[in-house]
Length: 129
Image (cartoon, rainbow, N blue to C red; front, side, top):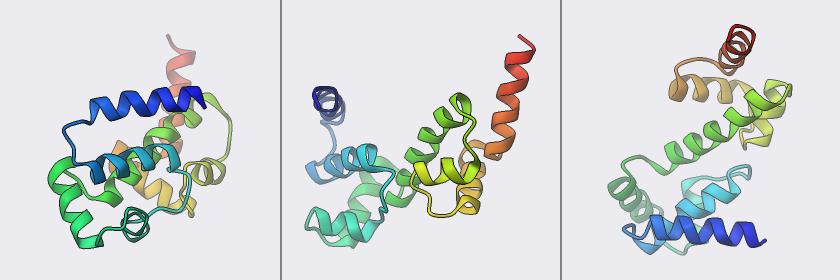
């Protein structure tokens, strides 16, 4: 709990130029990426209109709420791909993707390769230093 509090404090400080609602959404997504998240549920959580949140978030962060959620999930998947032998469906689930195919498509869109290709490239790198 102390570590989580510290991380939240650091993130809040580094995100002080964002409005409070955008900062709250960023922090919530960072700590709850594995849960079902979408614009509507986040707007409800922070008692704001979803169109207001969407516009404000895009203006301040430079991407949509959904894109930020997916980027956060893909970033988290990189550790699992490099540090475990979990299957793609297991990694997808642990990172908040309800569907392994959607995980693969989203990963490719963000990272430029599929999760399997990424994992194989890591394995080649460790075999051939």
